[in-house]
Length: 157
Image 1 (cartoon, rainbow, N blue to C red):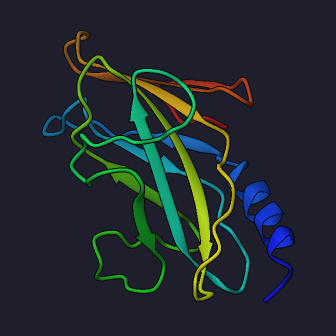
Image 2 (cartoon, one colour):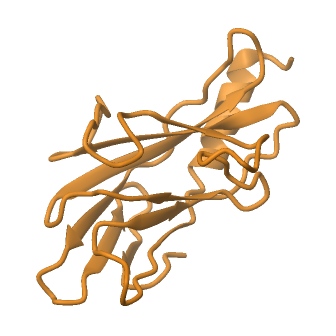
């Protein structure tokens, strides 16, 4: 195992490359679903990711309790493709459902390794999303607080 601080630093750098938050709304979907997508971590001992979230205001603690996937953090695996919390290690993304309409959500991602006990990176940059169904078909606007980029009904780059 590499030096834990080096791993933490590397995980943080990878997680900071949170490249996009996407959403796909079809006629049968609702405005309360978003897909979080980020740059993959390439550490050989990567075990998975954690998505932390909360609603209301920016910053920790990320202690969300009210979406379909459960309380924060949401543990994601890269090893079992049959697991509903599986993410592709080469193209990590995850659908979050059950977000309350017209509420701001704040999200960060961390990476974990397979040490016992596992090591976890620091938080990625925070992204916020306002889920708004007042437009009839539903829309999601996403803003990254650290990169300054924003996204409206499209992918962020």
